[in-house]
Length: 201
Ligand SMILES: NC(=O)c1ccc[n+]([C@@H]2O[C@H](COP(=O)([O-])OP(=O)(O)OC[C@H]3O[C@@H](n4cnc5c(N)ncnc54)[C@H](OP(=O)(O)O)[C@@H]3O)[C@@H](O)[C@H]2O)c1
Image (tube, rainbow, N blue to C red; front, side, top):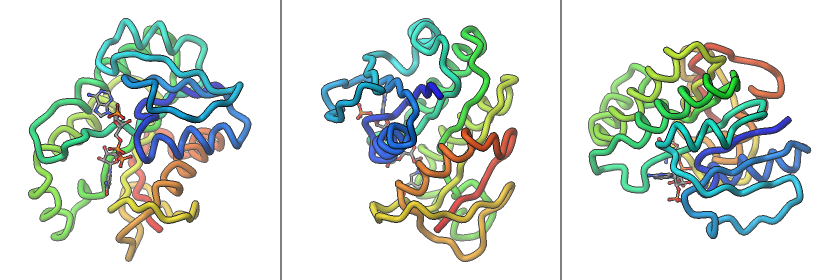
């Protein structure tokens, strides 16, 4: 498949790119800082662009099978609208360029529960932006999947548990490698379309 990855220079995004290449896919990494990508592969194309620019995105994502976004603000405590703004531009660009499948990374803190409510309060600026992103993703006629993991780690495991509409029981962390595996599995297996999915270790 031909995959369009946003956030490819980030810790989860790098895992998505590496695993996608290892699985035999073609990857376009759409990034603001191409120099941050050191991986070289004949199936990897790195494009410099603005994740909030609908015109740039719609031109760049022509002829792709799916979009994966692992974008996230570098400073989570500062007010920002990165996720909202990029979701708006991305979903509009997808509709213009005819790409239907979208898998995005959100957060388990949006599920109910007291620990999640505390996390949501501490990270309220980021969570507000992330929830706004989720609303846009669901409202634009695309084949979307929203992945909601708990705290992310750099562990080496690619295994995860998933549950549609809720967090799997007793899961408090997940490796970024496993998040990437989930996102790719969802696309390859055409699973969890129009679903918010709780994922955990
Ligand atoms: N950390 C956790 O425990 C946790 C838990 C649950 C969910 N999540 C979610 O997971 C997501 C990704 O996490 P991560 O650790 O992989 O993030 P990360 O390593 O901080 O990567 C963030 C990515 O977003 C890009 N980005 C940031 N601001 C941008 C902008 N203005 N324009 C274009 N690109 C921009 C970064 O590009 P540059 O390299 O150019 O900066 C980078 O590729 C976050 O959104 C977060 O909500 C995190």
